[in-house]
Length: 297
Image: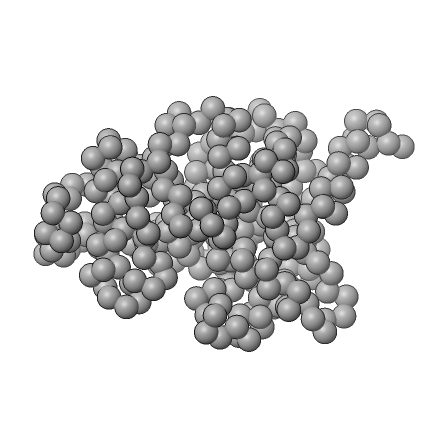
């Protein structure tokens, strides 16, 4: 099985564990990811906020290269990259004049853009391959599936799941044995775009998300966005400060969660890179598996 692949900047830097878990997972599934050659930054979040034409041309260049490689689709794990690539495809297909202008800038023709696939949709499509390989089902593990903004909105661009009542992430988590909790903040913004300019607002918004996940009984938050992960993981100590009873809540990429159910090496998937330690969760899962197998009474 072959897919195009756009890692984007985050997966090479601040979200290295996202890349490691994804690549470890697809290797175990015998899925081939063909990286787009000579890809460049998609422009999130600064380019499209500064210059609309630049915000379209940057991701359109990647789309044109992928088309030249013969790629029918591109998996973009980062939700921001997914939004920018899908947004560029939507704009150039809906505006012939803009498409011509971008083609002139890029000095190359623009045909039909490849299909852009986010990480949740990608895993959904692979469930027939994933489920037979689940060797450590996450039975009893309560997770809060957090979509944030960019996987679902704007719906005319993403055309992915229901914008108000999504189910895709819950389906993937349930397929590997986890129990998605019902909670209120799963499609609320974490404030990632204001991470540096309005840090206090980000901490307040993130605190509300984490508090709601805890109130619903979640033992972990599951995400598909590096910016959401960075906010909820790296800034969690600040979010918990002064909050009586606010224990550390691990924040896992959905690829890490699926990989754990498949028995993949946590270190190979980068779980040791998290700011909020994942070790208590790993210990709890190991004990649960041992009990299920009769090794611990």
